[in-house]
Every structure is written in structure tokens, then in C-alpha cells.
Image (cartoon, rainbow, N blue to C red):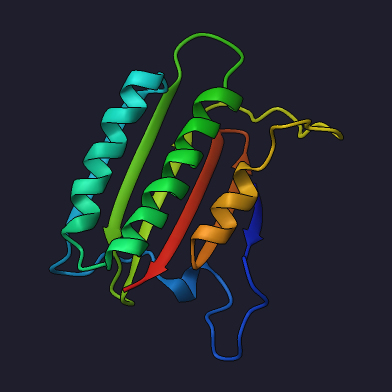
Length: 154
């Protein structure tokens, strides 16, 4: 498995250096969202609405909720479009408030992302957008699929 950390800014002094420091352990009292759905456009919109309702309950400010929705939706679209050559396209969406005071959204697929083309044309800006909208992002690619993990501080 290969982990690719993505950051929008150089890491400030005192920022946690990795996913373990950002926290994956759920907070005892925070809301939890777990959803598996086929990676189809209509289903992605439903998952986005569910995530929006969940995020509004976390105490994040409105601008951060919008960033979370846009970045997470982009990750879901990437999973649906790029992970599978054909057939069923399951996508897992998870969201949790962590014990470390962050909100963590994960998007998982069971496919293999196609290589990024040398010249993506007008496409290929999704990962940059995800990076710019989250406080911390990581992509784990392995033989069983890809997991995109996105964190925002509360």
C-alpha cells in the first residue's frame, strides 16, 4: 500500500505530521456517518446531501461545511469515474468527529485508479481542489482499492 500525503500549505510548526496525529479514533459523543452506494451520478448526489446534513450537525462553520462537501464530492466522483473500468462501482463514504477535535471524511473504492495522463487537458484538477479545500488530505492506494482521507479542524 502506498500513502500519498497531500497538503495545501507547507506544514506549519506544531501541525500534526500524519494521519495518526490528525486522529482516526471517533469522539465518544460525535455523529457518525457510514454509507455504501453504487458510484452513479444520482447516488452521488444523495450521498452528498446526507453528508451535508451530517456535517451541519458537527458544529463546523458554514464555509467549512461547503469546503467539506465540495472536496468530499470530488473524491466520490473520482472514485466512481476513475477506479473502475466497468461493472459495479461501490463507493464507501464515512464521516466521523475524531477524539482529536477534527472531522474526518473517508471515501473508499475497491478498484484501481487509472494513471494520471501527462496532459490531462481541461480535467485533472480534482486532487488539487481536494488539497486546497481540506486542512489535511491523504490518499492510500493498494491492491484492494483506494482510500481518500480528508480532515478539517473543528
